[in-house]
Length: 167
Image 1 (tube, rainbow, N blue to C red):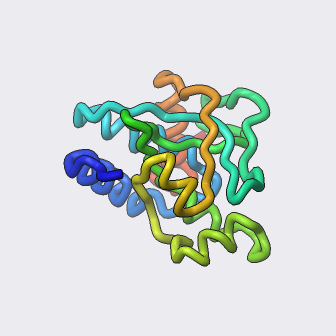
Image 2 (image 1 turned 90 degrees about the vertical axis):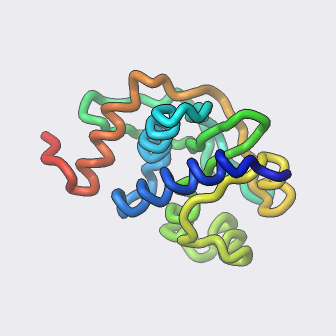
């Protein structure tokens, strides 16, 4: 699938800026997606933060079992995965390759992404069908993150990265 240049440029800029600003992103897919989504929305790029499950070569890596719970402090405990959805089945994946680096070396996800040279790569923009065909990644969206949760999640991400004093 050929992706629109405007979308590629906007996502790339927001993702690169976010990953440079927030080096501690492992396990922070929801907050990172909220931050990038807010920036994209400011630039009038249609998008939503999808919440769901992710499988790699048929093995569940992140499983959405229950809705995410976001504390006012911005912390969240959750087993699912988040990504940014764009029109026409395009997925923005800003955090998976950093998170996978923290997985055990024998995990299916890490081995698969290492084989494709994607570990610690940063962000990627890809169609859902190409993600499955090229990398064995199957995204199963269950719901969307409400914009009301963005601010506490972003503040939590800032606190984790020691950009604000979060009490």
